[in-house]
Length: 222
Image (cartoon, rainbow, N blue to C red; front, side, top):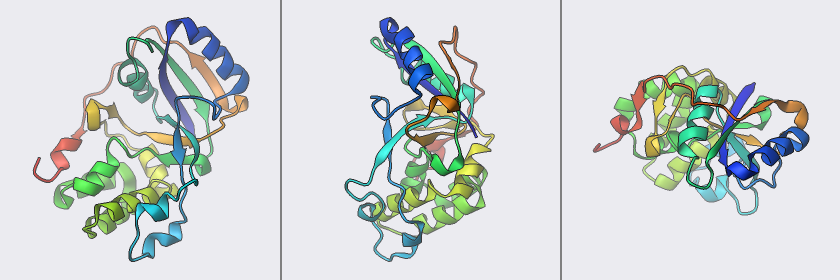
């Protein structure tokens, strides 16, 4: 699977960072990282499922955020991650097997599972995360406990069928904090140099397609 990671770095460090990526890949020493917990999918049937089951203390391993489209990475590099200090966008193109990939649900998925109106959300969940993704969502909406809903999301994001469906999504999502993307993932680290296809400092942001679905339109009491 081909991925694109968009970051912004200080201009005086950009050349060195690009050289580091080309030489060492993406390592777990980066400050731009998150965590994978990879819970046992069988615990979905646990009647009192909580995030303590899906995110046990000390179980997280380093992961990096990325998109399945270069336009999504361009957005994160030029807008979401850019600030006065980190002012130079970098886009990293790389390949990764699906086994090391999870959906990054923080800007769209978890909010719909926790606060979404099921009747308004079903068609979008099906389109963006597939039929198997909708099965997880239905299970989450049937549970009144917000922590259980979040835990179900933790299981959903690691299901390879859901990951594959999200990778193939064609709708542009408008998520939390004005984010715009078609898909978003976290990738287990390290990402080796043999996986790196290209590292570049783009001259200009790529145009983003108009948003097809806005998160706010699917929330209860929006």
